[in-house]
Image (cartoon, rainbow, N blue to C red):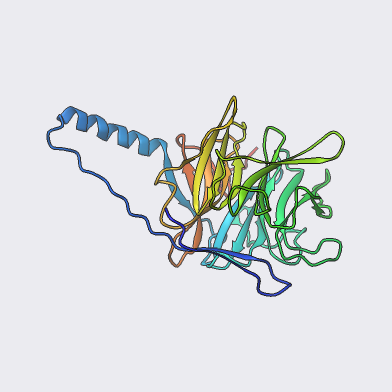
Length: 330
């Protein structure tokens, strides 16, 4: 898949740099099986394809009223409350805002801004495992000064579930450039994308760690992960052995080895389609992946779930199936 256009522009000092990924066109070339192949090989291949399709299944996830004609992306399930946080933007994928929907007895509630919402563009919500902290990006003012670039923030809540005031992460995590998609890994590093100087391409994947002295260390993930192109969103798996990344409008993966991250590979056509794929989220088990896709139609951006390792009861039903049958859940 080739990236036709990556356009960045500043509209006014009060507005964020908008990133628009152009439409994509893919030419798939496939050969036909020769008639001289033995029928038993054909039958074996057919069984294998059926089994693979059953084990690796991509389906739309469009619950009302989360799904809309606008662009929905960047999902995050609250591990404490099961609320659903996500980003809604224009059909052209601009003007990002974080919204939250609550699971009620009749389904998901009408999405609304979370308690910590601020001015400007905000996106990429992500909870830590215990649900005490949420990371996100924002152009909200810092110390009263208006910002044009997206920066990494975090917000914590107390034992009663009340959100505090968001905290702007310091340099060198944030930079004079733009940052996005902050995702803590099981290895103690915070992974994110940035267009800061010193990378291998226009935008790169970086990671940061807070040391014992309170100072941050930031490093580039290197050429196995980054390219001369645009590498935006890193998602570590729950067990830390795998990294999904969005680059040039497609989703890729890399595996951890004894010497670092292996060279990345592109996910298959069941995931990567002619439209952009963005904002991946692993299920808690790591067996499934929720992501958004530009459908290139009236629905704009919609969520899709990839049950890579077979069926899994995720994303969760709302209301839960037991409640739908008239029973209460424990």
